[in-house]
Image (cartoon, rainbow, N blue to C red; front, side, top):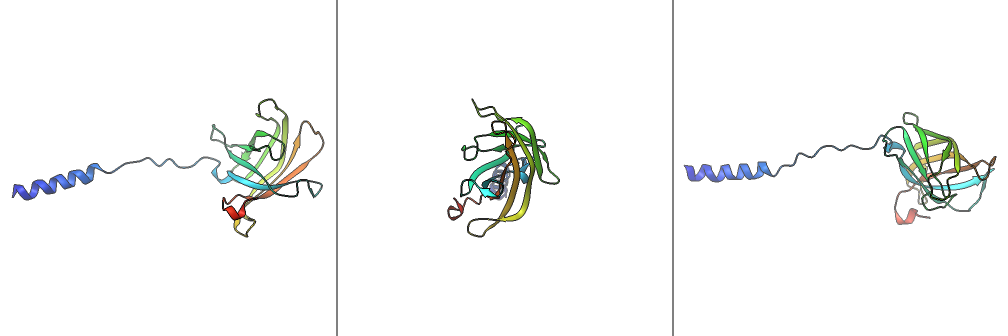
Length: 160
């Protein structure tokens, strides 16, 4: 009888010891507003580049109601600023936010920043989120630019 119970006990102990109790790490406070975006850069309705350029929005280390608005490739104006986010309404803004780009610490104003869930369409017709904002740079005061576009799908055929 012990010859049957002992192997069963070993198997039960083996499988019980293999289980992992991993914590649920969850997401960030601003995950609903975080994405890479394909946007047009325009002024007075005129597309200044004639194509979409990539920017990003994502959480700050504080993981609160702030997001980074980041032209990480210098596609628009070479800026990276913190913006205040209203997570319930998916809106964001910045007033005299200092860009953290080394050697180019200009102030940036962002108004009318908004994320529109499932209201964007990618290059090939995939439904994505949409983004819009007005932006003014300290080294071009009084000129208001608009950035608007859709979330990046990361499908090769949707890249610009």
